[in-house]
Image (tube, rainbow over all chains, first blue to last red; front, side, top):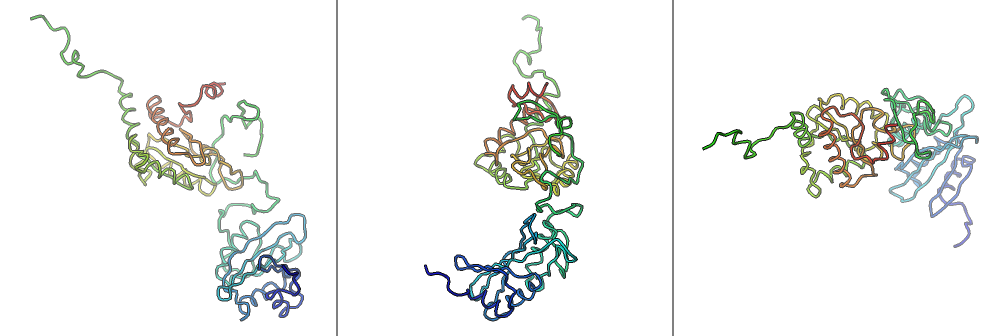
Amino acid sequence: MTAPAETPPITARVEEKFPGAVTASHQQFGDETITVAKDQYLAVMTLLRNDPTLKFNLMVDLSAVDFLGQSPRFQVVVHLKSLSLGHRLRVKVGVGEDGPEACTLPTISKLWVAADWYERECFDMYGIRFQGHPNLKRLLLYESFVGHPLRKDYDIHLQQPRVELRPVRERYDYQNRNLTDPSETERRPL
Amino acid sequence: MGVKTKAPAIEQGAFFTTRLDAVLNWARKYSLFQYPFATACCGMEFMATAASHYDQARFGAEIPRFSPRQSDVLWVAGTINHKMAPIVKRVHEQMAHPKWVIAFGACASSGGFYQNYAVVQGLDRVIPVDVYIGGCPPRPEAVLDGLIALQDLIQTRGPTGHTGINPRQTKEVLLLSRQ
């Protein structure tokens, strides 16, 4: 295996069109990954969609990662594939939670219709608002849900029931091998 | 020819006396109409149990009714999350008395391995449960055992249900539950 001597083709094309937009990149198993600046995100995605040498006509996946304690806190990851040219690309973009445009990112649902529900799920779980989205409301959770559960600072035990929960009369405590009443011991929130 | 002291039918064993509720409970436990509320993979095990290989119809629990108004027993097979909880509660309220509930599998019984923002930690937090069937998912033999346990419950406790006590519980657990 030879050492990578030159910039892989997709990354090179993006850097040629938008110098400085790609802040990091790597290549593994023949697929490239680029990290782009947030302000160039929409322009880069438009290029990837329309450029005749790239032709990414299929948006495979859009999700996010919460790096709590780092800046920028979130990272939105988009997977693209070109069905005509047969290559793939992973695009990462950092989304911070500070400043006037906190937790926002331009929508790409105008470029790929499939991104519509992915962005809604991403908003649902992480609270990232996709500006320009035609219908940005919760996709999976119910409307009365407060907060965004896949954020790392969401309490893992916190539940938001929609019906009144029946009391648990007795619960077998397997660690201490006796019956306990959760209302007395308050072992956990629910 | 002597005088008969007993009716001939009794001597020949043509009928016997019993308690009316015992007969009714016997009829109830062998004519269970079921509402399969399948939300996850446990639903496949329910289908396997109901199909010809394990043949749930042998126990009188033959017909799945897809209307809660025609059902006697509610099989909740699968994970119940908080988004689904009002629906399963409404289905249970629409069933006519007497009615029983079986929590089918680990998720319906306790939340299973899900302890997070989405999943109800046991179906009994939403509606009363009569029989819990463990397993992830339970094998058809376990399902039939749970069905027989429900039949024992109906025979011994009548149409009240909602006790949450499995008559097949071990002696240790029963003793603990009385403390």
